[in-house]
Image (cartoon, rainbow, N blue to C red; front, top):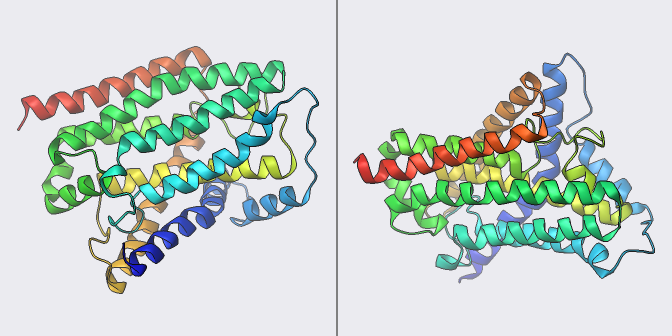
Length: 315
């Protein structure tokens, strides 16, 4: 890799790391406006993180090293994932190794340790949240894989960069029924993976309904800041995958300054559109009852499977 390529990949990681709180704040702001409220500033998540980093962490004496290690692992896996996901350019440092399988393993690694941390404190709510999180992950992860495989079959590779390059070279693929079905399936799973409505509600602390929040009830201080920051980065990465994999307009195929500038503007427009859609959806729908969540995820799995079948039967 050249020095320019290294700097650009470092820039992509910075965009994910520093843009994640702004993304979360934007969703909250748009939701507040749609609900007739003024809402907090889009920069409020930055202030929240700064406040949490300045606070001391209160740790139960019953916890093990897993409880302390998990926040750092979550942040590290999200930063590493930012080097795999093509944010501005398809020139990623891992090349063919940076495929969807490796990316999903990184996401699952963070989910696994977060579930362990929820159990580690011995809290009843932590155990409840961990069991729910793993049940959702077991349904969501196969859908992600199959939805991406629907695109990978047309590109002949599981490399995210090559899939984007193939779709950009054949823009009519974006109008294919299988492509659109895979997008809808991936969008539903993205809501589940990032704890958004109608699967989970990140703004509530109701004991009987929370999933992600139940696992992190025992965290405070810098540990909670790292977890919230990692959750924001995960949302950013999923929206970037939705934007660049399925609609790769503007993604830089070369490392020229003009191409990178266009890619940055396109990323803002595409992710901004998805943010507005998520805010409108969360304003319009209520949280599903827990036993209805598997039905929704099973539906998304069916859509992803149909997207794969269309590749074989519809040319």
